[in-house]
Image 1 (cartoon, rainbow, N blue to C red):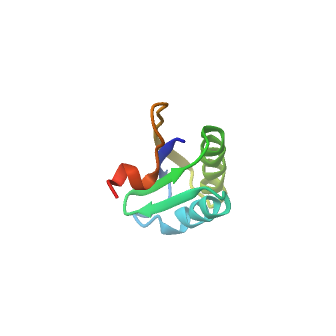
Image 2 (cartoon, rainbow, N blue to C red):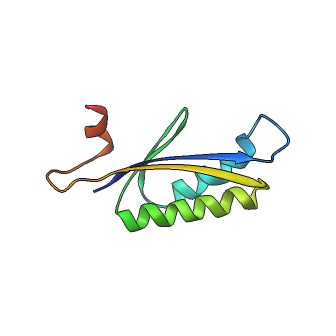
Length: 93
């Protein structure tokens, strides 16, 4: 099962503080039903690839609805076929 790191960077906000633009993104992640871990610089999600990609689309839409004029999205996906992959295994837990 893939593990992905998702980071969204709202631009065109007129302020260096971007928390209000990211709150709806976190809500979309919570609603997704995917296992997730919010980190200081992004969010890790675990789930089926199609579900992760659908979540990225919803987050993309949510940040624009929050008023951002531009968004840069960084997405890294780790997937493998030789063994099960989880957030915990990536952290060495």
